[in-house]
Image 1 (cartoon, helix red, strand yellow):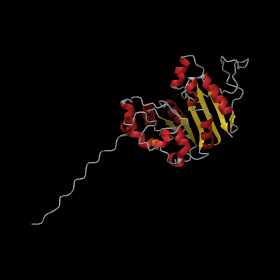
Image 2 (cartoon, rainbow, N blue to C red):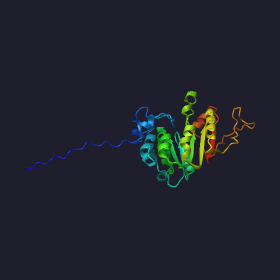
Image 3 (cartoon, one colour):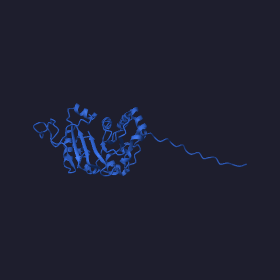
Length: 283
């Protein structure tokens, strides 16, 4: 009688976790979403300026569903690997947007200007899901979402002269003096980002926190690589001793009509804050 060896049974492979599930399983305090995220522990433990405050609010079913359906189409992890913008955007010039919140502004600007690619970076999980939902509805082809720390993206993944613009709208102002060092727009950040901007690139910042606006103006205005597009001022009536007789505050830009009103902007205006835009050009 011939004996036959039984076929060994391999252990069942667990299905790959959906993006929303992988993110919800991220260790507490981990400083970047995981879709998956492969940045090294050294990258995350180093002492340096960070582009974010970790925020992992609860996702709605619609946001989680959009993440699971669309992340592979529009999303990418900030993992330190070199990024080929031509592969992602073709021949489109690319603007980097840091901190897109819930994504309404990003989606609106992408639809209004399909000839500009937008590389949108944030760590807010519901915002990723919401923006993916908006992109799915509009069918926009000129946006990619990056999950994680924009500093790692700039330092390790992008080459010099690759960006046509930079947008930072209503970044965390870190109002307490002891936290000012955490503000994104400061000298160390510009040392990193300016080489990545191509000549002619547009730098556009907006904030409703006046002390942060002053810091942005001082830091951006001190760089010889940048030219202020509105040194004459924005025409706003700032309650500041430096304003001119006509109410103009030198250095700030008139509010561009092409920048949609953001949720954070509406909240600031409701509190009586004054919103200021800053527009600079890379020479």
